Length: 396
Image 1 (tube, rainbow, N blue to C red):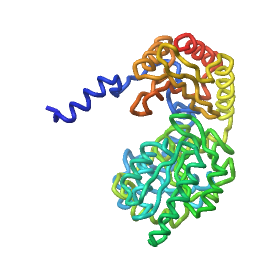
Image 2: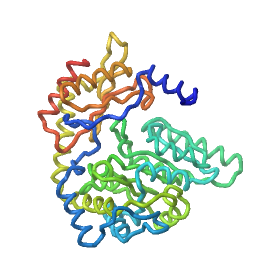
Image 3: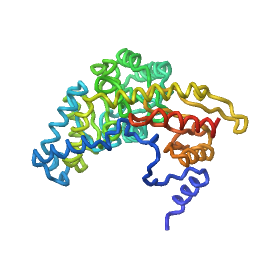
């Protein structure tokens, strides 16, 4: 039997209507996946990856070991060089997932008595990595750079008064937040980091493939790549594959290879995964899908405004506000308070043929439950209009 404490936690989830369950594949109109450009289903990427493996005689099902043992096949060097050049970084180091990359970085790089300041909405993988660090960690209000500067000033003054050894300071945020779809003022953040001699870490998981020249990310788009300490990019979203990479200096790469436990003690990705990543980057050179996605983002925003869904509205029944969070990205979230309520709206939309997922508390704070619309290059304008009109009928 399951231990009583664990059973109690499960029962509590059920009581809160927040129990997570694995879903089944469906043929609904996709407004939920991270496959922003449709690369996961791209025949050309599949064929190009297969062709590369065949012509380079890489017919292996597995990598056979960690990269420090037997798994560091030649394709790793090829793909890491491609990635670093594409993102205008000195080096790239591939990890098995974005979760592994964040865990590996934050658990090893910040040292004892260093200071980490992170946006309160940072992804769970960032926060889990920070929790494994020996550094002192403090969160700042979401996208509030005034609050960040106040905390920086206070923490550094406190450290100075204690006459302790100078601490390294790490500022952590995301270029596109996965649950709100918004972005911080990255240019001002970089200036703030330079003022306080802080190391800036940017998670670009939801920006790669969407922003920048050929989709190289928001940091490249803003020409800030030389002003940040490191970037974390992932391949399981717009690239339609799997894995991640940490972009930074050659010295940082050497440090991670020596001290990042999720890198050291895990089996390497097989050649097929790397060939798919390589083919995905080659596909980004064709900007057709990216342009279609940008058109859909603009059209979705215009339809939200046309239907008066943008401004938060007061609901007399639930006594809560609801409406879309402003976003210029592929992620658009409509706040609908309460797990029961937002799940019901999601089910109604799914019944009408649209795969729109409800994001429940505790994944997001109570009263901030939401429907999360992920836009894609392959969504049609007719589908966008229909799903928003249905939302207006069901929830507004």
